Length: 562
Image (tube, rainbow, N blue to C red; front, top):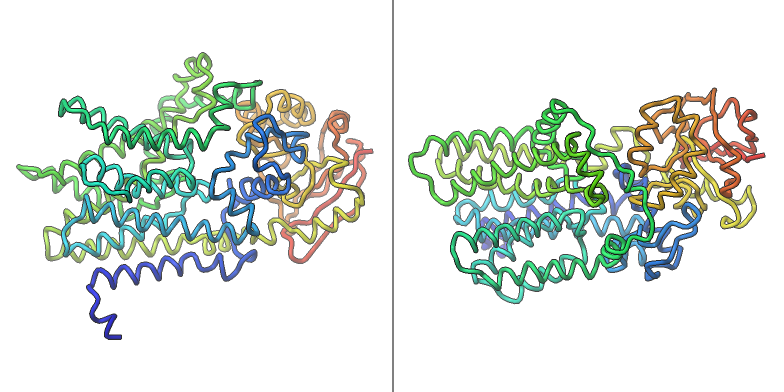
């Protein structure tokens, strides 16, 4: 007890924040597979990919290797690098334990990184420790995209290292940070854009100060080279493309001017699903108050100017994001394929760093006015943390009626299906209707359908023949598949863009029109449907058995191609 009372208020706050961070992540460890986590771009894809790669034994497969379990041979390069920390976690541990450890590790690094950055460069005053501590915790609790790892949440730590190196006040710690971060983050999902911004900062210094900072330049180059070495599969695919992929048919720039303007405001105020910051209710109003106060000042200090730069940069990022989808870009994208195959809209992945730096600096500027402003800042910190705690996956996805991890992957139910079919899983192919193919993949089935970042374009065209009549019925689905195609699914016009029909669903398919001849030619023998197909006979399908299991979210109708 004496030790606790002898600690400084800042250290006490750090310990309390650390306990709250552990509390936030604890449901993943306590509930395990009974936990509720994000489905989109997580359960429906990445977690299943990790397991498929693990089971394939191709973690270190060559650049020409394929994974036969998916689409009769998905290129190994589609699964990313073997030098990724999250790949190793899922290769060594059960899926849910690997996921929980990744969440904890990522949030701890995010908390430490933001705290170091604020203490060293933005919020230095000793009495402003509540801002340093609690903004750092708030940043660490943002509902980031899980498979992105430290791609966005590692940016404060990287910026801390770069700013120290830039100022000539660096030790081995900064260099180790820049060397290790690439092993638990992604180049294309965050750090390409971050390093580009660092390059612009170096160039600005070079042009304004007329003195090149070669140590700073070397640090940027070092981190970039490490990423390129780690992501050698991506580099190989871009530099030596063997054949067109599904990404070659991406048509992303389709918005009219006014739709684009609307997207600017949507992104600015609400954010994006992959980099959710939950900044709307607290941080946005505080930022405008801070700008108004700075604007009234006759003289602005360095921190005022930094805040204005952040504020303007945040707006620019939302404008860039929205206008990347403006139809005026399309002719240029058709001419230069790299503009389609690489998503340059992701400069907005810098926004979590920018927004929470704005939160900290803006709060510090108001804090400095004393009195009621300090109370206002404290209220803002508390409310923001309450918002983030309320956005915990276990709360959000349970309330939304989403299945738990165990209910989603339904391993017991799919084991029953495998045993009923009674043949080696590699000897036949399946496809799913009304559920994500990732579920079958997770359970070891060889699937003709998939959700992947890229796959051979020839396969997309062949698979399209199976669903051509269904796409023709729905312009929305036709555009979705033809202009993107990342979800190579058995789309059904009657079901629309819905892929999670739970066992309590009343949905039925009355007028299915599939080309089962092509399906069979591609090796397809079974369809796993979450809803009954009323005209199965017309499609050459025979209902073999219905599978219902208490721990599964689905009722599976097993159809065999005659």
